[in-house]
Image 1 (tube, rainbow, N blue to C red):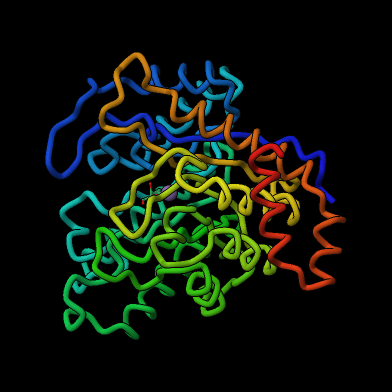
Image 2 (cartoon, rainbow, N blue to C red):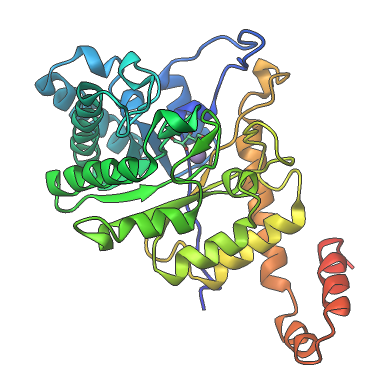
Length: 346
Ligand code: XUL
Ligand code: MN
Protein backbone atom coordinates (compact mmCIF):
# COMPACT_ATOMS: atom_id res chain seq x y z
CA UNK A 1 0.00 0.00 0.00
CA UNK A 2 1.13 3.53 -0.65
CA UNK A 3 -0.82 5.15 2.18
CA UNK A 4 2.01 7.40 3.23
CA UNK A 5 3.08 8.66 -0.16
CA UNK A 6 4.27 12.21 0.16
CA UNK A 7 3.19 13.64 -3.13
CA UNK A 8 5.36 16.16 -4.93
CA UNK A 9 3.86 18.90 -7.06
CA UNK A 10 4.65 20.48 -10.37
CA UNK A 11 3.36 22.92 -12.98
CA UNK A 12 4.67 24.56 -16.15
CA UNK A 13 5.30 28.20 -17.09
CA UNK A 14 2.34 28.02 -19.49
CA UNK A 15 0.02 27.45 -16.53
CA UNK A 16 0.49 31.11 -15.59
CA UNK A 17 -1.15 32.19 -18.83
CA UNK A 18 -2.41 35.60 -19.79
CA UNK A 19 -6.04 34.93 -20.68
CA UNK A 20 -6.00 34.99 -24.48
CA UNK A 21 -8.69 32.92 -26.24
CA UNK A 22 -9.65 32.59 -29.94
CA UNK A 23 -12.08 35.50 -29.51
CA UNK A 24 -10.08 38.00 -27.54
CA UNK A 25 -6.67 39.22 -26.45
CA UNK A 26 -4.83 38.73 -23.19
CA UNK A 27 -6.35 40.03 -19.96
CA UNK A 28 -3.17 39.96 -17.88
CA UNK A 29 0.27 41.35 -18.84
CA UNK A 30 2.99 38.88 -19.86
CA UNK A 31 5.32 37.91 -17.05
CA UNK A 32 8.95 36.81 -17.18
CA UNK A 33 10.20 33.29 -16.56
CA UNK A 34 11.86 34.54 -13.35
CA UNK A 35 8.51 35.76 -12.05
CA UNK A 36 6.97 32.36 -12.79
CA UNK A 37 9.78 30.48 -11.10
CA UNK A 38 9.46 32.73 -8.05
CA UNK A 39 5.68 32.07 -8.02
CA UNK A 40 6.29 28.31 -8.17
CA UNK A 41 8.68 28.54 -5.22
CA UNK A 42 6.34 30.74 -3.23
CA UNK A 43 3.51 28.26 -3.74
CA UNK A 44 5.77 25.52 -2.36
CA UNK A 45 5.80 23.38 -5.49
CA UNK A 46 8.71 20.99 -6.04
CA UNK A 47 9.21 20.85 -9.80
CA UNK A 48 8.61 22.64 -13.06
CA UNK A 49 7.67 21.05 -16.38
CA UNK A 50 8.95 22.61 -19.59
CA UNK A 51 8.36 22.88 -23.27
CA UNK A 52 11.68 22.98 -25.12
CA UNK A 53 11.22 26.68 -25.80
CA UNK A 54 10.19 27.43 -22.22
CA UNK A 55 13.67 26.17 -21.34
CA UNK A 56 15.46 27.75 -24.33
CA UNK A 57 13.39 30.62 -25.77
CA UNK A 58 13.53 31.18 -29.56
CA UNK A 59 15.04 27.73 -29.89
CA UNK A 60 14.73 27.67 -33.71
CA UNK A 61 17.10 30.61 -34.09
CA UNK A 62 19.86 29.08 -31.93
CA UNK A 63 22.80 26.77 -32.63
CA UNK A 64 23.13 23.43 -30.85
CA UNK A 65 26.02 24.86 -28.82
CA UNK A 66 23.93 27.84 -27.75
CA UNK A 67 20.98 25.60 -26.84
CA UNK A 68 23.22 23.46 -24.65
CA UNK A 69 24.76 26.51 -23.02
CA UNK A 70 21.35 27.94 -22.11
CA UNK A 71 20.09 24.58 -20.86
CA UNK A 72 23.12 24.30 -18.58
CA UNK A 73 22.52 27.82 -17.28
CA UNK A 74 18.88 26.99 -16.57
CA UNK A 75 19.90 23.84 -14.70
CA UNK A 76 22.15 25.94 -12.48
CA UNK A 77 19.30 28.35 -11.79
CA UNK A 78 16.92 25.52 -10.93
CA UNK A 79 19.51 23.87 -8.68
CA UNK A 80 20.06 27.19 -6.94
CA UNK A 81 16.33 27.41 -6.23
CA UNK A 82 16.02 23.71 -5.26
CA UNK A 83 13.56 23.08 -8.09
CA UNK A 84 13.57 19.92 -10.24
CA UNK A 85 12.83 19.82 -13.98
CA UNK A 86 10.14 17.15 -14.27
CA UNK A 87 10.04 16.74 -18.05
CA UNK A 88 10.63 18.53 -21.34
CA UNK A 89 8.14 18.46 -24.25
CA UNK A 90 8.89 19.54 -27.83
CA UNK A 91 6.47 22.30 -28.82
CA UNK A 92 5.66 21.02 -32.28
CA UNK A 93 2.58 23.06 -33.05
CA UNK A 94 3.68 26.71 -33.37
CA UNK A 95 6.29 26.75 -36.13
CA UNK A 96 5.27 27.12 -39.82
CA UNK A 97 6.93 23.72 -40.46
CA UNK A 98 4.27 22.07 -38.28
CA UNK A 99 1.17 23.51 -39.95
CA UNK A 100 0.32 20.11 -41.47
CA UNK A 101 1.43 18.13 -38.41
CA UNK A 102 4.97 17.42 -37.24
CA UNK A 103 5.98 13.74 -37.38
CA UNK A 104 3.04 12.99 -39.74
CA UNK A 105 3.32 16.03 -42.00
CA UNK A 106 2.95 15.20 -45.68
CA UNK A 107 6.18 17.16 -46.30
CA UNK A 108 9.37 15.15 -45.71
CA UNK A 109 11.42 18.28 -44.86
CA UNK A 110 8.89 19.23 -42.20
CA UNK A 111 8.94 15.72 -40.71
CA UNK A 112 12.72 16.00 -40.50
CA UNK A 113 12.38 19.37 -38.76
CA UNK A 114 10.13 17.74 -36.16
CA UNK A 115 12.56 14.89 -35.53
CA UNK A 116 15.58 17.21 -35.34
CA UNK A 117 13.80 19.51 -32.93
CA UNK A 118 12.71 16.55 -30.80
CA UNK A 119 16.33 15.41 -30.55
CA UNK A 120 17.23 18.88 -29.25
CA UNK A 121 14.45 18.45 -26.69
CA UNK A 122 16.05 15.21 -25.49
CA UNK A 123 19.41 17.00 -25.19
CA UNK A 124 17.83 19.82 -23.17
CA UNK A 125 16.04 17.36 -20.88
CA UNK A 126 19.26 15.46 -20.23
CA UNK A 127 21.09 18.69 -19.35
CA UNK A 128 18.24 19.66 -17.03
CA UNK A 129 18.63 16.35 -15.20
CA UNK A 130 15.57 14.49 -16.49
CA UNK A 131 15.20 11.82 -19.15
CA UNK A 132 11.41 12.16 -19.26
CA UNK A 133 10.07 13.52 -22.54
CA UNK A 134 6.36 14.30 -22.90
CA UNK A 135 4.83 14.10 -26.34
CA UNK A 136 1.51 15.82 -26.77
CA UNK A 137 0.94 14.95 -30.44
CA UNK A 138 -0.91 18.18 -31.07
CA UNK A 139 -1.26 18.26 -34.85
CA UNK A 140 -0.73 14.55 -35.59
CA UNK A 141 -4.12 13.97 -37.15
CA UNK A 142 -6.18 15.66 -39.80
CA UNK A 143 -8.71 18.36 -40.37
CA UNK A 144 -9.71 16.47 -43.54
CA UNK A 145 -9.44 12.69 -43.20
CA UNK A 146 -8.62 12.07 -46.85
CA UNK A 147 -5.59 14.40 -46.57
CA UNK A 148 -3.44 11.69 -44.94
CA UNK A 149 -3.06 7.94 -44.95
CA UNK A 150 -3.83 6.79 -41.39
CA UNK A 151 -1.70 3.65 -41.58
CA UNK A 152 1.24 5.53 -43.04
CA UNK A 153 0.85 8.09 -40.25
CA UNK A 154 1.28 5.37 -37.64
CA UNK A 155 4.47 4.23 -39.41
CA UNK A 156 5.73 7.82 -39.38
CA UNK A 157 4.97 8.17 -35.67
CA UNK A 158 6.91 4.97 -34.97
CA UNK A 159 9.86 6.24 -37.05
CA UNK A 160 9.90 9.46 -35.04
CA UNK A 161 9.67 7.65 -31.68
CA UNK A 162 12.44 5.26 -32.76
CA UNK A 163 14.66 8.20 -33.75
CA UNK A 164 14.21 9.68 -30.27
CA UNK A 165 14.76 6.36 -28.49
CA UNK A 166 18.01 5.85 -30.41
CA UNK A 167 19.18 9.42 -29.83
CA UNK A 168 19.34 8.91 -26.07
CA UNK A 169 19.21 5.29 -24.86
CA UNK A 170 18.06 6.47 -21.41
CA UNK A 171 15.23 8.72 -22.55
CA UNK A 172 11.67 7.72 -21.70
CA UNK A 173 8.85 8.98 -23.88
CA UNK A 174 5.50 9.68 -22.22
CA UNK A 175 2.75 10.14 -24.80
CA UNK A 176 0.01 12.55 -23.68
CA UNK A 177 -3.05 11.57 -25.71
CA UNK A 178 -5.88 13.95 -26.55
CA UNK A 179 -8.70 13.03 -28.93
CA UNK A 180 -9.23 16.39 -30.65
CA UNK A 181 -8.33 20.10 -30.61
CA UNK A 182 -6.62 21.50 -32.49
CA UNK A 183 -7.32 18.58 -34.83
CA UNK A 184 -10.72 17.25 -35.81
CA UNK A 185 -9.47 13.76 -34.91
CA UNK A 186 -6.04 12.92 -33.47
CA UNK A 187 -4.21 9.73 -34.41
CA UNK A 188 -3.42 8.86 -30.78
CA UNK A 189 -6.59 9.80 -28.88
CA UNK A 190 -6.42 7.58 -25.79
CA UNK A 191 -4.05 5.79 -23.43
CA UNK A 192 -4.90 2.50 -25.14
CA UNK A 193 -3.69 3.92 -28.46
CA UNK A 194 -0.53 5.33 -26.83
CA UNK A 195 0.41 2.02 -25.19
CA UNK A 196 -0.35 0.03 -28.32
CA UNK A 197 1.86 2.40 -30.31
CA UNK A 198 4.66 1.79 -27.79
CA UNK A 199 4.70 -1.87 -28.84
CA UNK A 200 5.53 -0.98 -32.43
CA UNK A 201 8.68 0.89 -31.42
CA UNK A 202 12.21 -0.44 -31.10
CA UNK A 203 12.10 -0.24 -27.27
CA UNK A 204 8.52 -0.54 -25.95
CA UNK A 205 9.71 -0.43 -22.32
CA UNK A 206 10.74 3.21 -22.77
CA UNK A 207 7.46 4.41 -24.25
CA UNK A 208 4.74 5.12 -21.72
CA UNK A 209 2.15 7.76 -21.11
CA UNK A 210 0.91 10.82 -19.31
CA UNK A 211 -2.78 11.09 -18.46
CA UNK A 212 -4.48 14.46 -18.52
CA UNK A 213 -7.90 14.37 -16.81
CA UNK A 214 -9.49 16.78 -19.32
CA UNK A 215 -8.18 14.85 -22.32
CA UNK A 216 -9.68 11.59 -21.02
CA UNK A 217 -13.01 13.32 -20.43
CA UNK A 218 -12.91 14.77 -23.95
CA UNK A 219 -12.48 11.20 -25.23
CA UNK A 220 -15.61 10.20 -23.30
CA UNK A 221 -13.53 8.13 -20.87
CA UNK A 222 -13.21 8.01 -17.10
CA UNK A 223 -9.79 9.40 -16.09
CA UNK A 224 -9.64 6.99 -13.09
CA UNK A 225 -10.04 4.00 -15.42
CA UNK A 226 -7.36 5.42 -17.69
CA UNK A 227 -5.06 5.66 -14.64
CA UNK A 228 -5.73 2.02 -13.68
CA UNK A 229 -5.20 0.90 -17.27
CA UNK A 230 -1.85 2.70 -17.64
CA UNK A 231 -0.69 1.49 -14.22
CA UNK A 232 -1.48 -2.11 -15.18
CA UNK A 233 1.38 -1.74 -17.68
CA UNK A 234 3.60 0.25 -15.23
CA UNK A 235 3.43 3.00 -17.81
CA UNK A 236 1.96 5.98 -15.96
CA UNK A 237 4.95 8.26 -15.78
CA UNK A 238 3.21 11.58 -15.27
CA UNK A 239 -0.24 13.11 -14.86
CA UNK A 240 -1.82 16.44 -15.76
CA UNK A 241 -4.62 16.71 -13.25
CA UNK A 242 -7.30 19.27 -14.07
CA UNK A 243 -11.02 19.34 -14.83
CA UNK A 244 -13.31 19.69 -17.80
CA UNK A 245 -16.99 20.55 -17.99
CA UNK A 246 -18.29 18.21 -20.69
CA UNK A 247 -17.42 17.84 -24.35
CA UNK A 248 -16.27 21.36 -25.14
CA UNK A 249 -12.95 22.99 -25.93
CA UNK A 250 -10.10 21.85 -23.68
CA UNK A 251 -10.78 23.89 -20.53
CA UNK A 252 -7.90 23.04 -18.16
CA UNK A 253 -10.06 23.99 -15.17
CA UNK A 254 -8.76 23.68 -11.58
CA UNK A 255 -8.57 20.09 -10.38
CA UNK A 256 -11.86 18.86 -8.92
CA UNK A 257 -13.78 22.06 -9.63
CA UNK A 258 -16.37 20.43 -11.91
CA UNK A 259 -16.61 16.85 -10.72
CA UNK A 260 -15.42 16.21 -7.18
CA UNK A 261 -16.42 12.57 -7.31
CA UNK A 262 -14.27 12.03 -10.37
CA UNK A 263 -11.41 13.80 -8.53
CA UNK A 264 -11.93 11.35 -5.65
CA UNK A 265 -11.83 8.39 -8.05
CA UNK A 266 -8.67 9.69 -9.74
CA UNK A 267 -6.81 10.24 -6.47
CA UNK A 268 -8.01 6.86 -5.19
CA UNK A 269 -6.69 5.19 -8.34
CA UNK A 270 -3.35 6.99 -7.99
CA UNK A 271 -3.09 5.91 -4.33
CA UNK A 272 -4.01 2.30 -5.01
CA UNK A 273 -1.41 2.07 -7.75
CA UNK A 274 1.37 3.61 -5.67
CA UNK A 275 1.73 6.54 -8.04
CA UNK A 276 4.38 8.91 -6.75
CA UNK A 277 6.45 6.23 -5.02
CA UNK A 278 8.80 5.86 -7.99
CA UNK A 279 9.53 9.57 -8.34
CA UNK A 280 6.44 10.59 -10.32
CA UNK A 281 5.01 14.07 -9.75
CA UNK A 282 1.48 15.41 -9.43
CA UNK A 283 1.42 17.99 -12.20
CA UNK A 284 -1.48 20.36 -12.64
CA UNK A 285 -2.12 21.44 -16.22
CA UNK A 286 -4.58 24.15 -15.20
CA UNK A 287 -5.12 27.69 -16.43
CA UNK A 288 -6.51 30.76 -14.70
CA UNK A 289 -9.97 31.77 -15.88
CA UNK A 290 -9.86 34.61 -18.41
CA UNK A 291 -11.58 36.81 -15.82
CA UNK A 292 -8.85 36.28 -13.21
CA UNK A 293 -7.32 39.50 -11.93
CA UNK A 294 -3.55 39.92 -11.77
CA UNK A 295 -3.60 39.79 -7.97
CA UNK A 296 -5.30 36.36 -8.08
CA UNK A 297 -3.12 34.98 -10.83
CA UNK A 298 -1.66 31.93 -9.09
CA UNK A 299 -4.73 30.81 -7.14
CA UNK A 300 -5.88 28.13 -9.61
CA UNK A 301 -2.60 26.32 -8.86
CA UNK A 302 -2.78 26.75 -5.09
CA UNK A 303 -6.44 25.68 -5.22
CA UNK A 304 -5.77 22.60 -7.36
CA UNK A 305 -3.15 21.44 -4.90
CA UNK A 306 -5.38 22.21 -1.89
CA UNK A 307 -8.26 20.30 -3.49
CA UNK A 308 -5.93 17.39 -4.26
CA UNK A 309 -4.85 17.26 -0.62
CA UNK A 310 -8.41 17.51 0.71
CA UNK A 311 -9.56 14.80 -1.68
CA UNK A 312 -6.57 12.70 -0.64
CA UNK A 313 -7.78 12.95 2.95
CA UNK A 314 -11.18 11.70 1.76
CA UNK A 315 -9.52 8.81 -0.05
CA UNK A 316 -7.45 7.89 3.01
CA UNK A 317 -10.45 7.99 5.34
CA UNK A 318 -12.87 6.14 3.05
CA UNK A 319 -14.23 3.00 4.69
CA UNK A 320 -12.68 0.49 2.28
CA UNK A 321 -13.66 -2.48 4.44
CA UNK A 322 -17.28 -1.36 4.51
CA UNK A 323 -17.15 -0.79 0.78
CA UNK A 324 -15.85 -4.32 0.22
CA UNK A 325 -18.74 -5.73 2.28
CA UNK A 326 -21.25 -3.81 0.17
CA UNK A 327 -19.55 -5.05 -2.99
CA UNK A 328 -19.67 -8.65 -1.72
CA UNK A 329 -23.42 -8.23 -1.23
CA UNK A 330 -23.77 -6.53 -4.64
CA UNK A 331 -25.35 -3.59 -2.87
CA UNK A 332 -24.02 -0.96 -5.22
CA UNK A 333 -26.89 1.38 -4.39
CA UNK A 334 -25.61 1.64 -0.81
CA UNK A 335 -22.03 1.93 -2.04
CA UNK A 336 -23.03 4.83 -4.28
CA UNK A 337 -24.68 6.65 -1.38
CA UNK A 338 -21.75 5.91 0.92
CA UNK A 339 -19.37 7.62 -1.49
CA UNK A 340 -21.67 10.64 -1.77
CA UNK A 341 -22.09 10.99 1.98
CA UNK A 342 -18.37 10.51 2.60
CA UNK A 343 -17.64 13.33 0.14
CA UNK A 344 -20.28 15.47 1.85
CA UNK A 345 -18.67 14.88 5.25
CA UNK A 346 -21.45 12.68 6.65
C1 XUL B 1 -2.45 20.53 -24.49
C2 XUL B 1 -1.66 20.18 -23.33
C3 XUL B 1 -0.22 20.58 -23.37
C4 XUL B 1 0.71 19.53 -22.92
C5 XUL B 1 2.16 19.86 -22.95
O1 XUL B 1 -3.78 20.25 -24.37
O2 XUL B 1 -2.16 19.62 -22.38
O3 XUL B 1 -0.05 21.72 -22.58
O4 XUL B 1 0.40 19.17 -21.61
O5 XUL B 1 2.64 20.03 -24.22
MN1 MN C 1 -1.42 18.62 -20.60
